[in-house]
Length: 358
Length: 266
Image 1: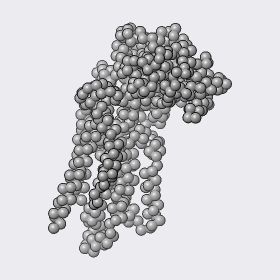
Image 2: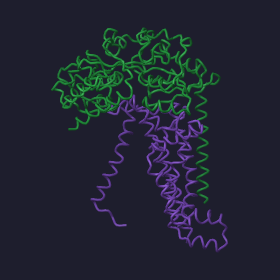
Image 3: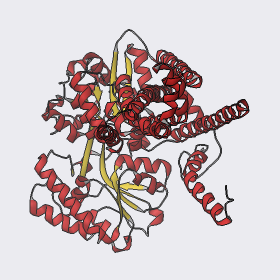
């Protein structure tokens, strides 16, 4: 009995010491006076120095939390019990959150830095007039490839993926809309197509890609490409930038038939308990210098015109990641196709994957 | 004990090698200055420095440990009493029913437990954070403690209790001076198992964290989108070393206790 009491006391003392340690650490990083906001963002998707700077400037304490998928984030917000003040969903998630009445309209008067954003990225179909969302980062879907492992193939067209010399060399991202969209684009159709016969045709064409497909995977793509285990990958521009950061041999291209243009935007969820603070945070992130520093850290493309002007021209002049407007013309933003249509996309994608196994 | 044959030794070594290789692979790359897990460029301690400079990560680490310690302590207390209650149930059918209910909680998927906690907490208005995580960890640890303590209780002869009662022990004495000392190894085993369950639980914790409160497993999972940095390797290495220290410490503590019983008995 004695040893159990001793152990209990030891555990309680250890917990108390740790609790004290946490409160000391929290005090050293927290600033008091301006209240606090909770930011809910993707992992590794902000420069932590900027959070500190925001705290110092405004006296608002930032509680920072991360999520790993739009779906997880929406579930957490929908259930309540938390008070997230700012979140960064992708465009299709914003549409869904709007439908489910999970967002608070953004007061543009409190975001003077909105003028820094390139008008091209404002007033998009998923949020007309930017009533609920402000652009954070953007990018494209394209082909990352490693010329040192290839025999001079280039990827100006989606059809180049069907090149018979690429046997077992192509990785596809495990996502229905990206892969089916690629099939549609390669046939010259819109990647928002709701025409079942077009979708059928795209799936049948994708099936002929089977011999070239090495794997259909998720985030592991980055690591596989870095290690040169595969030569070609269908992926997002941000992931391609991640690969190139480590392996300089890798190149990225967006085929000319068209592709997807995506956005991650900042929104204020209904759960917000400090709407003022949330506006202040969004406005801060849109500042020219902060946005430039953030884009340098994260490596994705910023929609902030004022930031682009002060960033390294070598980065912002890179047409692979900052395609000029005429190249963007053939890019499409995903539209919310509704549950039924998405079901068809998923079913066809499954059919394509099943076919792969034979 | 019979001596192991050569083949058995080789087999044993191979199994341990396979079990430990990934951990040492991970620790090895925590010293890599190259920034990835693919090629080793040179030795550096910078990832360890990064762990101690990242206040947020440190707070999360400490919170994870606090939750683990407190939840396993409380669940051990509840679980031990529960196990004693189950063993002394007179009605056989009833006892089996209660035991089955306990076992269902162990085998039911974490995702379901987590989701149901999320619904419960939001319904009764508990704010997600420290309290919600602690309560849910206690809840999923209790059945584990019960299972660990039960065999010890069943193996205890009921005559021991009768003898104690004959010698004038009160109910309280029987509990604290007969039953608990007898099942002590089971209690410690239950506690340590609950501790490890709490430390690495992802599924349940994911649902009930919120308002800035997070644990290590949830945090690492969220980082996966942008690629896990070597800081996580360094942190994992530190945790591995600390765990190793605890196990070695526990071993010596046990050894000494056993020796003192051995000499005291003569």
